[in-house]
Image 1 (cartoon, rainbow, N blue to C red):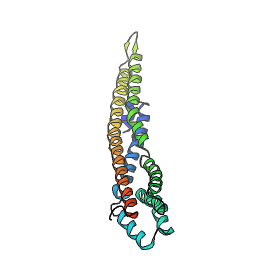
Image 2 (cartoon, helix red, strand yellow; image 1 turned 30 degrees about the vertical axis):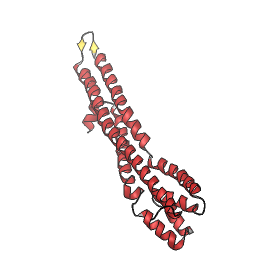
Image 3 (cartoon, one colour; image 1 turned 45 degrees about the vertical axis):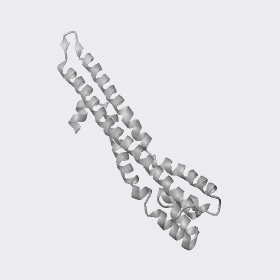
Image 4 (tube, rainbow, N blue to C red; image 1 turned 60 degrees about the vertical axis):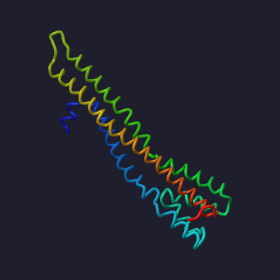
Length: 202
């Protein structure tokens, strides 16, 4: 590993840092965007059952507000359950926007890494080419400097692509995952409103 860094020169350090950040984001989002964590399928039934037994009591609201993202959306709706369905939906929409923003956390950073990594690799390539041209002297080329310049150019180009390709793949995957989860939460929230206001059978 150290030999690779030495051969690639200092331009490889920003790429290594970008790769570490990308791996951390990919792992964190893989854990945080699980459907069972964001929008548990059984949550709607449990909330309706508890509401019918005890109403929108403070204990239920507090538990939902500190729970899964879908539970937070339900808590916003239950706080306004005595209002019209329209008011209840507006409260859900407001909380839903905040929840959606939280689900998208770090994805902009991952997308930025996917975009700039090839550029960082290109920077390393240019620096390597400068070294190659710098190896030219009136008496001929310095083979050591020439070889080092070629190493910098090639290693940084490859590293830029190695970081960018997986980052872009996971960025696209998580963006689609977030969109799917938001649609699922919207559907569950609409069901909650309609069931509690007698417009739909549970």
